[in-house]
Image (cartoon, rainbow, N blue to C red; front, side, top):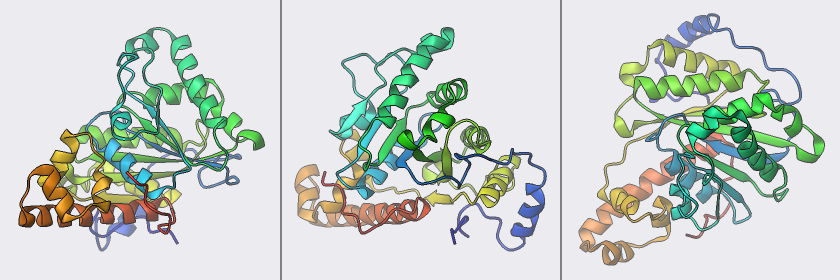
Length: 317
């Protein structure tokens, strides 16, 4: 049975379950029906999407961790923030990994707002890319900030759910929504989940709410209307809610600065880290131990939430 909430996460503790059951009755989500309903339908090509409406939520980090859990046989698509990044530029994920298909070097967000034909053409290409990919390969879709709304509009206008429920283009999609402890981020995560939990927009079978504690604990938001609704939605649809603890190791900042995958440290020794960043043995040992422990915990939580098999070899980076 899927574990939906963790006691140290956003759960209200003893007595909260009964309260949340009562709260669930207040929220009027459409009950998903049809071949691409939440939790329903046959298994197809695996599509894992990561995104939120705003930047700074830990989206790229989560995508990195997911890639470390998957095999070499994968397809990685990065739809960057499409703020006219330019044909010569790469997405943040594309600077870190070599096998990323950058599709965000297209129209600006303003162009997409002004002319619906622009965003439809942009997303048509991505949809066909997903459908035409290697059948046995999982597809990881990394959304930049401000992109997911245009995807939802396109999916609704273009009957994407019907297309991806066909036998020849069947997709079993899952969405990871990372968000930090702020009213804006929590509200954005909830509004995206509301849209997709309707079951008539995009064939999302599971949504994972990932509470990123990089900016602090979620404790003060535990009983806000938004978090109450997230917990109620998680219970109704068996959506996992997991926590990504804050890691204060300076090594993380060094990896970020150098556009180096965080997960690369899993295959490095103390001597490797010391030589690369000019740290003495003791400094390198402490930093490496902290980051490895933090990454392994995050990998365990994500693999459990998405039902990934941990025996799959790590990606060599």
